[in-house]
Image (tube, rainbow, N blue to C red):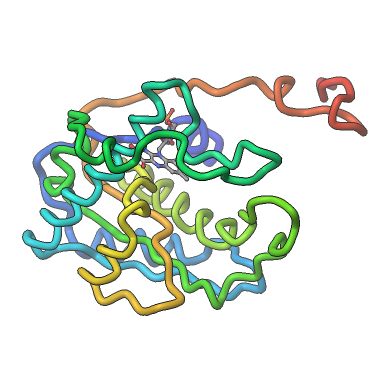
Length: 226
Ligand SMILES: Cc1cc2nc3c(=O)[nH]c(=O)nc-3n(C[C@H](O)[C@H](O)[C@H](O)COP(=O)(O)O)c2cc1C
């Protein structure tokens, strides 16, 4: 594919044909995705390919709990878990226990275990140079050493005629996932990728124009528009 085309037409795909993806194809995608950049080239990503039906079912249940917490925020107009007070998370903005008890039907979440490919993306925290640690705000730079790899996987999927989505709500249940999959201390869930053959083709993504997020010389300077 032409690179700009791929960049502009790789959506979050959440509905898949009931068709298995060959392990050789998945291997090829991983083999290309691994050329992603990371801080100090430490490549602190790990991928767990989830195949066992019982494990997939449990992952779906745990994902649904995270999804319920997420949607409880959306219902009251909040960005879920956003560090919104001086760049820090002030603690739960909704009753999380009540949220987990409240069903939030969702086609993707409720059928997660049926996704042709499920990959748990795990970060080796000890390999992440988190240069914003100790600043008086939420640290986030560490994720930058993992997510380019995740997006490379989505681009690789696109190149294979497949699609997928990188999700994060499973992180809400990290202790249970850690136990389920024997993930050692010092490692964190970065995401869960679902991949497969898309049921529909998306040609147009909704994104803000360049002028909306650029400025010249100062944060509040004029938009960059040559
Ligand atoms: C860091 C990150 C976390 C995300 N977490 C979830 C998630 O938990 N569940 C989900 O369905 N989509 C998740 N997404 C997908 C986004 O919702 C999606 O990329 C965005 O809405 C744009 O979708 P589009 O490319 O189809 O326009 C996540 C994406 C990113 C980059």
